[in-house]
Image (cartoon, rainbow, N blue to C red; front, side, top):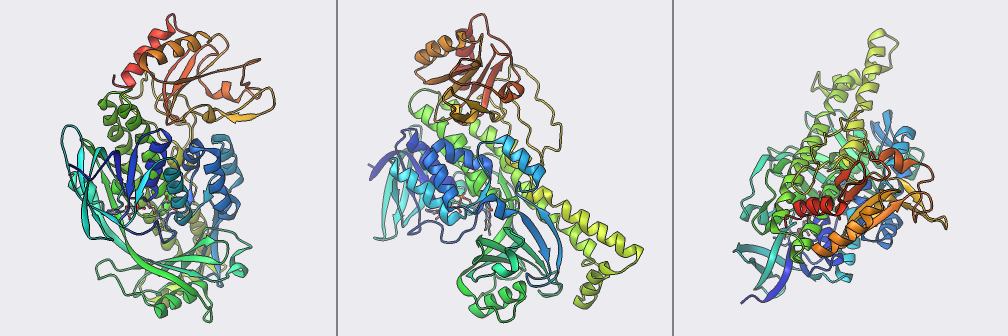
Length: 584
Ligand code: FDA
């Protein structure tokens, strides 16, 4: 007999675990979350928060979304990604990033009702965790996962209460491993992985110091400092990352992974900070130091029976592109509604198989992208002449050569410009963040071909209602002037039907089929004199079906079916599709 029973036990209160708990509680599913430490993230690791993540917070509630903006640094402060020899020293180049270039800003505004922002993990985790607990999640800190055993009916997990030293067992219907990059749950579940751990070593130095005079005129989240020879025989690149503008900072500095992780004491941390800032007298208020490894590994299967893993447990990669916590929260958004439908008896367990089918390719994609982004610093070093020698004097001369009045120097200047501009694939890759399209039996394409990307799919988001894609965003208007995004009409744990004039038959059909399958289906008719009006025509331009057609979305706002025009028997069509999706 287990000490505790619950429907879903979640190991880990990071972005993945806390998001899963918040969503499950919002959907009315009993769940419990544990963390081996006494509290949440104690360093501000993840920070770049993309529009897809903000859409999940918005789906959890406007209060949750608003609180995130309240604590975040505004997108405008994320602007210039600077390459320099130190904050005080010479600037080599800069790049407009994270949707702050005017052209990119327009794409952001057209893609989502939400805004990208910089929200350190020390703010994101408490927000998600608080949302979860206030909606019913049972949480236990200082509680460590040790092992699990599963059978046909459920999972029995053994935990260690670190306060008393006693073991306790939890019986749950499902177990979620959101226990980070060294996931024991994934290991015990025997998940298969591709790639390699520990391909590089890094240290974080967190400190407070007012650096506004060096940075406020070129607001950025990331200042890349190139100092030839600053580390033994190396290029000497360090990152000064803004945590709070402009008095809290996190320095990321590499170490040789082939040697043991270094002991970073206050004197060493202060020296690195002074070197990168370029001020030998800088006083810092050191908050913490830690070391971490750069990984290049992803799970090719994300679940085993009743055990599902998410977040860094299934995708382990460097922070490049800022994808870690964002993708972790999307994992939770994908899985939570499926668990809720199965646990409420509204879907068959086969629906849960689609989690791996839909999320494993994304784990591979983002791990590959993040590691490629690291490699893409190489051409900048090459253009600066830092790869031709390991002698710091020669390296400095090569860098200085770009200032000369010669054809070679002009060529070098062009190469530096181009290679810095190419880092857009790391720092403004809107397509990587937004373009996820799923293909599984929880998506009914009815044989419709996937639309090809018109532009570079990593850089640009392309809206489509092709089943598998996230519903396009367009602003709609009520008679009283209220403005709402098409995304706001969907989600909230429910399937939604969007149609127009001539598609009224879908309303009755959704009501009928919803009753038969015991699910709530939201229905919205959009058009003149309807509740929601498309005055600008933006929805008509992106919906890719006729007025009488239909776009059906899942609770995670992904389109799961569409039809060009009204069907002869709309209820039969909806029934066929929903039965397939719900594996019922
Ligand atoms: P995470 O590691 O956050 O949480 C794991 C949880 O499991 C913790 O609560 C832990 O205590 C718990 N746990 C582990 N083992 C346990 C056990 N045996 N028993 C009980 N509990 C256990 N990402 C991003 O999206 N944008 C960004 O800008 C950045 N930037 C960034 C910078 C730096 C310097 C780093 C190091 C990382 C980033 N990231 C990032 C990555 C991001 O921090 C990371 O992807 C997420 O924290 C992953 O969230 P998870 O919830 O999966 O794991």
